[in-house]
Image (cartoon, rainbow, N blue to C red; front, side, top):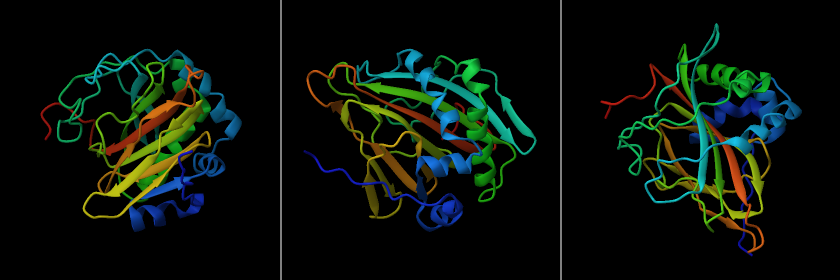
Length: 250
């Protein structure tokens, strides 16, 4: 059996200190609920929406293992506004595999985006991060991902270790079912330090200062030949000041 490393969880009130000290912080589910003024049952009520994610047809590695939905939001002091549906774009400098593409993913379902727990995640993290770096509004891109093992292996980050070209990245582990792998790795962008651990508790959170660290998750495989339905579900929220990334940026 391959050894796994436990996440270095922090209390909710240490968010600012941890991000300033090392560029990332990890929170257990109960602390996520506290950060976002919601409850674990409310967060769990979002989980069925991962069962209807359509396939990602843009994978350049030929894989069929990723399903996703996408949406943009403006998160300010005065509230949350859903942006008109748009293509997801990343410059090649930040995504060597898919950078430079205008990728039109299916939108996040209206009932998901209207759920109190969803708005709590956006507003709660937006306020906490605004205390560290001023932005009003935050331009938030939300990605629901399911990585499956139907073809034997699934790659949560096929582009490898990377930054996203934003200010902050929030990665929520929503579910793990009948898989091994999916280890999280975080490295200093300008130094040798790094940490590895496996998120396995539903609604645990990795929060990253994207200007300071790079990150990746290792491939997943089924626990056994009988586990054809293995999958890993995540929610990724990126927070950027000044606007969404667009074509023409370096």
